[in-house]
Length: 120
Ligand SMILES: [Cu+2]
View (cartoon, rainbow, N blue to C red):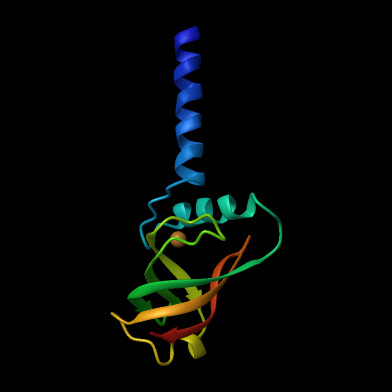
């Protein structure tokens, strides 16, 4: 009994660690993205804005997303990773796959949205 409880506790702890620390999100993994959002919400509520540098991996006009291999973002507590951001048509207009970019991301409970992006 005691041993199985310990295993449960360890599993829960590992799950939390994966969520809050080094989440390795696959670009299209919705669940991982939600975990990412929650971990950034932990520090304070409401939207947070940060400047991020990365390389464009994919652009999906239908979904309205840009997938970026981004550098660590200390302000949001994010490690380096590949993830998809919501991005409007105006943001996607002049951006191509392979571009090295700097962008502003707004992160809140609804997700992570790029509000401006420039090529480096
Ligand atoms: Cu990320």
